[in-house]
Length: 355
Image (cartoon, rainbow, N blue to C red; front, side, top):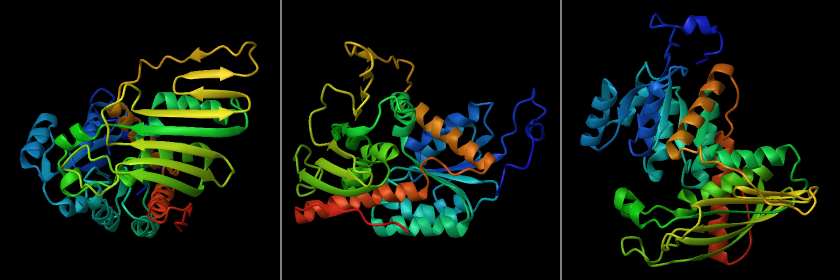
């Protein structure tokens, strides 16, 4: 389905010149997925959430009533088949993503799927195939690329202000005990933190440096939460070598007491300058003063979701490839899969292809 052939005037409604909400959205999973509902209040967006799906009947009915959504269902297949839905947002537990992607693609719907896209390299390759066969657009909801301070770092890097990249590191460090209190599926159907957690910094560094060639990983089990399997790793130190030759490391730690540092961090070290979280140093400035960037306007996860929704909307209207499409998403899963191989063998592991 294309939205690019009509002028803006075609989409105005009689309600005060408000843009028409002609891109129908259905949401599967109303935990994080509830963030998508804010698009209905954005008069400049052509998107409109029209249908909701969740297996929590009380949450489903409550959000529908609050936001005036007339169609609700506990059957994702019913939502995916609705003719008034053009795009499906998938925010279900990780292990359900594959089935929900299959249903959406089978019905010719465009797809936003929260991270991780899926939970195995085999599934990732299947998604690439399905999306191509269906001829739809696909975006992985990796919020890290839509965080203003990381967007600023990427702009500096792309413009050459940091020079030739020498080294990089990223972290996602988060005490997951309160998260599991809110979302019991993470221990009932144990989430693999390599796919569901480390995917954030893996994708973030890949945005800068491209494809990962090889990884070497140390992993441990913290035993911080009795609900999480005692033999399942929750702390990771990941070393990466990109095909470009850049080397990097990732700290992905989830079994710990919440530390006094930003939950997500990024450092890019180049031969002209260094960017570390919200601070930057340029070698060309005498004395190398540290400059701090002020991102107090950042409004959190919900705003990041809205940013990638508007990006996806533009891709639909202008017929462009999304920033984090199914191939980019599959490469993150391939890297996580190689991390698992390295943990198992105790050796460096090559990242497999996705096509």
